[in-house]
Length: 207
Picture 1: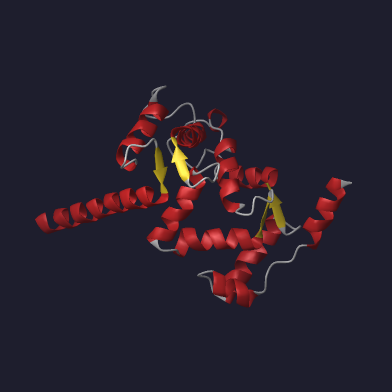
Picture 2: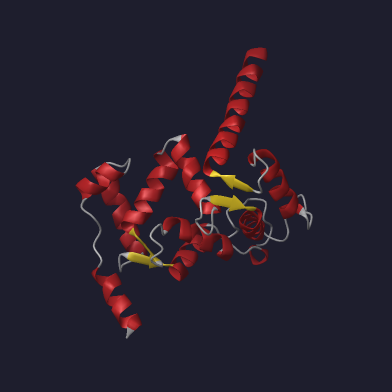
């Protein structure tokens, strides 16, 4: 009966009005209409559960989205898709509505640098306690490596995820307390972006 009730809720769901969504996102009404048609085409019920999300994700990224992957049979995007689903499902309802989808898409495509970094931080903060610990980062990195596939070029070492996490915390954990806060994450990423910008301009002027 619970499944039947959930199905009825899913079938009856209607998104917020265009005016409200236009005010909440960086899309205009025409763009929202196009996005909604595509969303409804993939998800006629108006909401996406995790299994459906994983199926859609695997269709768009059959090789984990990485051109380095040699064999699709060697890659597994399901774990990363699980974390990505949770990042879209901000209300922890177990489903993604059009509002959730278009709000996240607006940030990822047209949000400010800070907004994009905040969204990425929330993706890494698996338990949503406001910090990223080494266990969470390790889970995310392993999921990304699984998505890339077992056979990549150059071949990844077995301890590559650990090295990646250690490097992440060396750079991000400013006060060395074993966790990365949102402020530390944003500050560190902006440092990297600034460095790359300065380096690029220096190379341009030196030509």
